[in-house]
Image 1 (cartoon, helix red, strand yellow):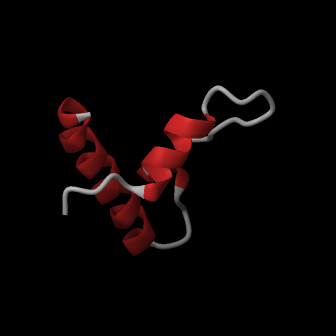
Image 2 (image 1 turned 135 degrees about the vertical axis):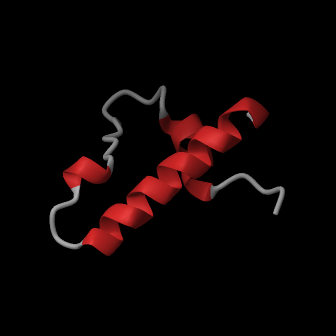
Image 3 (image 1 turned 30 degrees about the vertical axis):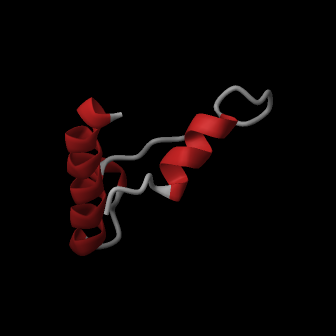
Length: 54
């Protein structure tokens, strides 16, 4: 590990570019399958745990 996610890096690089925006979803936005909702929730928890290290 120890590497920054490509998505996290892309958000950091592109967040100031006019015309580019980001949409954030959580498990309530996923209605198709419970497993997909669990994946979204897991990534959210992982991101929250990584936040102090950034």
